[in-house]
Structure formats: C-alpha cells, structure tokens
Amino acid sequence: MRDEDSRDLRRDFAEVVNMTPAELAEWLDTEESRQAARSDGGGEPFEQELGRLSLEIKTKPVSQLTIDDYLHMRRIIECVHRHLVRRPDDAAGLAYWRHALMNCGHDPLK
Picture 1 (tube, rainbow, N blue to C red):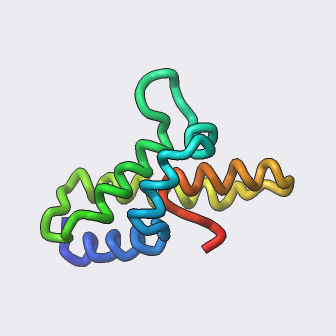
Picture 2 (cartoon, helix red, strand yellow; picture 1 turned 90 degrees about the vertical axis):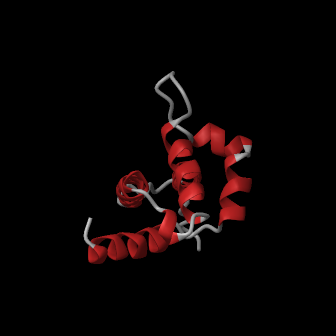
C-alpha cells in the first residue's frame, strides 16, 4: 500500500470512527449494543466485531498498523457509510440505527 493511500485511509477512518476508545469500549459492553448487533448465529455479531477492531486500531501506534488493519479500516468505513444512508424516520428505528452505528465506532449524534 502506498504511503499516500494509507494516510488517506487513516484520515477517513479517524473521521468515521468518532468515538474515543473509552467510549467505544464502554458502549460495546452494554446490553443495548448487543441488542443492536446482527448475528449469523456463529461468533461475535458483525457490527460488534467491527467495533472491537475499531478499538484495537485506534489504540495502536501508526507504525504498528498492519495490512489487515488497513483492510479492516476500509470495511469499517464502508459499513458506517452504508448505515448512514439508511437513516430511518421513526423514533424506534432511529435508536436502533444509532446503536448499530455506535457498534462500529460512529456516534451520529457527535
């Protein structure tokens, strides 16, 4: 990966994942987080997995980021963007939508 590409990806990731590591860690341990997470019946639900990856990436020094970390950043950015365009109109839907985004590390109210 070119330096310019990795720098752009880190910038985009920092803009999308707007929760601090402490906020994200606390959120992922809540019942609301678990309820908003989609699961395929296997391991950890998809958005919670992305949230934990976001947390790991945000706490790593740039010099220790791996190619896998950059691939995860791209997945997280894409997931957040997909959720953002699907903003519901009803209050219950808005709460679930926000919680799903927060599971990825993005709080739309920030």
